[in-house]
Length: 176
Image 1 (spheres, rainbow, N blue to C red):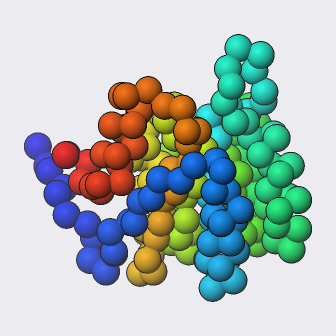
Image 2 (image 1 turned 120 degrees about the vertical axis):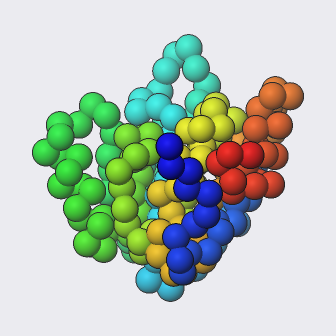
């Protein structure tokens, strides 16, 4: 059994913050500043399309609003209903730095390595479990630059959701 209990050399701990939907414009300013430094950004949504049963943010609406908010930047989109060829094409564009923002579902949770990506925004973070949030956060912080994970939520959260979000902000230790 191998236990990896430390970060690779040269990597900095990821700074994790919690933000409410009402502070979105301030968050957009932060994303713009990171992109202007030459970094890239992931924005993850829990759903691909709107659901009549769930009041979660969805990737298609999110992609439209991100396009309007950041018209000067190139975007990639990746979700589970795309063909493997299309997903790989979009991921390669992001990896090569041809796009600045990757709008995705959790298909990017594992196996993605883009050292230049410094910000992970997780929409409806209260809807994800700790393991999934930790995996998503692990998509950034792969280079030498400081990286950030922003957990976006609604004001209304269950007690358990609040504890999960507070735990993610408090530690980057997956064992904890």
